[in-house]
Each structure stands twice: as C-alpha cells, then as structure tokens.
Length: 318
Image (cartoon, rainbow, N blue to C red; front, side, top):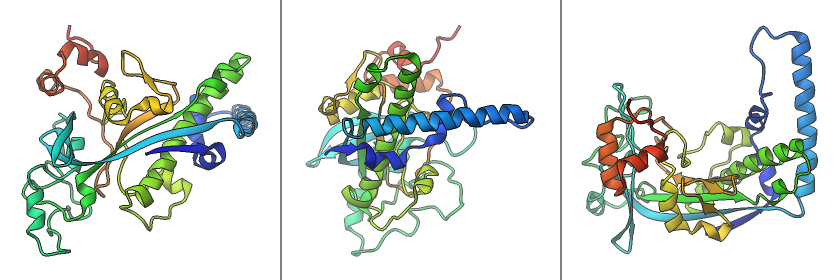
C-alpha cells in the first residue's frame, strides 16, 4: 500500500519538542538566569514563526509519502519469519538484550511462535488461551509469549513493514544556512509525523486491530496506543543493514527512497521499520552485543561479522 499526504494532514502530528531539541532550545536546566530564559523563549518563538511560514509555503507543492505492507509472521527463536501462501517469504533476524536483568527482550518475542498456530484451530471458536498474556504489571522472566500457547487473535501472527519520507527538494532550494537547517529539521519532523499518521490509520483501518481507538495527538506522542513501530537504526532495531531486507519487501523506490552502501536512506528525512500489534509490545534498548551473539547473528544474516560491526557501529575489541 502506498499513501500520499498533504502537509495539512500531517502538520498536526508534528512533535515540536523534537524540533526544538534539534535546534538546542528544547529547554534549560534548573538554575538558569531569567535573562537566559527570556532569550530562549524569544528564540523558540522566532523558530516557531519561521517554521509555520515555511510549512505554509510547502502546503501547495510538497506531499509526504509512505509505504506499508502487512505479512503473516511468526517468531522462531530470535528470528521473525514472514509467510505468504503457507511458504516462508523472508526471515528477519533480530537481536536480543544480553543484560543480566530480566526480561532479556527480542522483537521476535512479540509474535507467537512458528509451528504453534495449529493449536489455534483446536480451540473452541472465540476461545483464547487464558495464560497467553501476562497479568497486568507482572514482569516476564523470559520471552513474553509462552512457547506452548498461541492467541486466537490474528493480530499476533502478523507484522507490519513501513517506510515514510519527504522529498529533499525544498531543502536543497534553501538560500542560506539558516533556511537550510530549518528546512531539514522540518523535513525530519514531517517524515516522523507521516509515520505517526500512517501508524494510526494502520491500527484503526488497514490492519484494524484497534478500530475504536480515539487518541489525541498528545496521547499519540506519549505512545498511548496499542503496539509499537520500532524504526531501523533505533535502540531495539540497531542494524542499519536491515533496510536492505525491508527494501526487498517494500520497494522503497516507489516513494523515492534509495539506500546508501551503509543502509542509510536518501532523502535523509525518511524513516523505516516494523509494526507490532501485541498489547505488551514495548520499546527497549538492545544494548551491548557480545561476540557470541554477534557470531550467531552474522550466521543468521548470512553476512561477515566484520560487516555487521560496521552496520551496528560496534568498535573492534582492542
């Protein structure tokens, strides 16, 4: 599915604190002088006014774009397995936390295990396993999904893949450094806002696992919705080379995204990643990746460990 959005459609979803953070005016720590606070407020007000004028200018000539595809998917160990017509379509290896504290999470945990779906058909219609989900507030000790239980809700055996972008043309047209940075930071926020709008539509309509959801923009920014959308390059999905796998499945060139040799997306104002529906799915930081996991991950990816060190930005020991 390919979507295009007018600036007016995504503008209300812009997360302005991140915009201010990019400019270094997100706020001041305690102890700041009244003069410093006044100067900061004035700078923020100017940035806000200039940003609104630029958005007004872009309204009639720029659209943001997004891609989304929904696949049947299962977890198999630390891999996500995509299935089409009862055959394996692709395999997305994931990384697991290696900290000593439980739980040691992996994104594959948020899909029910491959090979267990048959048990679903043996349950009376409409009946779900009572212990599939953990009691609210109870911390899991391992995988979030018990290996001997599966849900009847098909949302837990599907995975969304997405990409969102904004053309860099208006950034390149900037006539001075200030306007170029203003254009770039706005483009970054518009790409993220596009992903926010797309995710809302996915939850309520395209995937439809939360059809009655009605959240304010503030609630969306607080991630009060069901599910998560981890982006490539972020803490729970740190391997930039996964963009090559996503590109094979999404064909990002449909919306003008091309990949560099390092897996970075061009235009810069682009975001890609995965969407999970599990109500207990949450963001986490994979953190330190040990040599043992790196070797196993390289085997599952079919890539040399040294190449993955580069994609994961892991420094060589010593």
